[in-house]
Length: 217
Picture 1 (cartoon, helix red, strand yellow):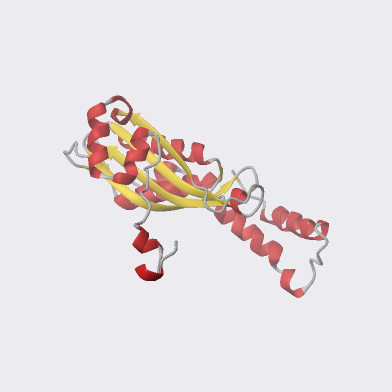
Picture 2: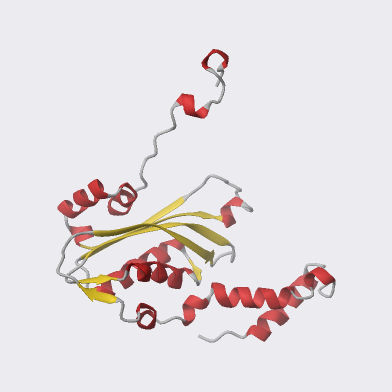
């Protein structure tokens, strides 16, 4: 997929005028160029090949132990409003003799995130790519994200968080694998169970800075 930078600049200039702005004023003079460059970067995942991205960084290792990488930052654009959603991605997999160079998992997340996306689809794409690339025995992926299309417009819910998960192979089929993952990593409990981890509220003493005698929380 190619990108027409000049066309994006032209359309951005027209959009500014349609909004009632003066596209020739100082603060907006280079905005079309900046927007075009930003969109090229934020959609660069369309023009990235999985094989080229991994670049051979898959290594032979005789292990069947679970591998988990937590808290990979993820930034993407919602395809409905083209507004950002952002959060954390957690990936777990059980290899069959081959493992990833750890940075490649983060790069896979970026590749699929740098597209117009649905969080549900993004989660599935990452999971399937990990599964296929090393013929993994099982894969579990979870994404926890906040969507600006819900926060700065529309329903304006500032504390809402969307959790999606995708499980393949033994992560889906084996109760033993799910139990092991439950013990190893609390964020991945959600991916295996398909439901977000319940977070206990902070103790009252931590939530209220007033001394006990003055507390009226």
